[in-house]
Image 1 (cartoon, rainbow, N blue to C red):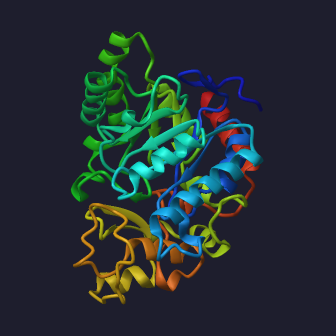
Image 2 (cartoon, helix red, strand yellow; image 1 turned 45 degrees about the vertical axis):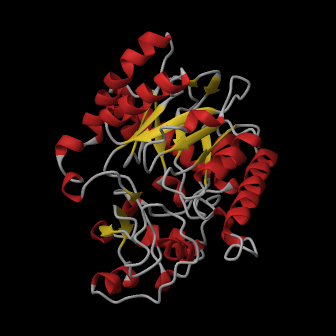
Length: 361
């Protein structure tokens, strides 16, 4: 089955054949390997920037430059491997946010996705000659409106698209713990809210702001549901972990395959946000109050309470990426336990299209 029954996702002058954005997964889970594979299938491949310099020899001693260098390498490598559309995900909470944004723009990246805080000043890095699209990630209609209003007033522009991420996502969540399972905050409610919030800005600028649904979208059937609700596309991350091209270690991927439904848990992160992860010994020990040997090699996240935290979230995620799961854990979406095998990105896309087709009947 081709993309026939699916509409293209149009972000400015970018035509995305397959309206799927592969979510950015740090640390080191979605780099050039996964991003280029997704871009080659007609979707948007996304490189995650947190801790991207983890394999650079001077990562600990020269944190800022190591990350810039690694980001350049990953974008260039993805470009060599794909002629498709590529994005980067840059969290507002990163202390090196500005450096990473400038680097991505200099490298001619197609799209910057930015969440984990409100990217209120993101447009200051671009001018009319720069083609890079700016796409904030929000968790409410209110946040979408605040960003659009600020960009409109201060920079006379609006977001090129908006990703709305619901509470079923993996990793850090933009919701208070009690809201995570509250139907009031479900993605089904958030998508129409965000569409409504950006509508006045679309009218004012005579431009479309496509809304992309994210967080817990796992099947083609889920995709169908959110496109019916008015989303122009979906962002999926968790389902891409169990692919051969994903940049994580085999052990990391296997954690997803082995997970049961009850293993998907909400944890408190040192960053001060709840996060969704796969329960393991490391998480158990932290929750019992065991402190892990802790030092903060680089204050990488503005919101991290690094003086009082029992472990370094960056180190824990880096260890997990390398397969050292006794010293870390895997972030994962609500549906991660559904994975039963590792497939190629091509096979996964074929499955999603078939599931989508089945849902339309």
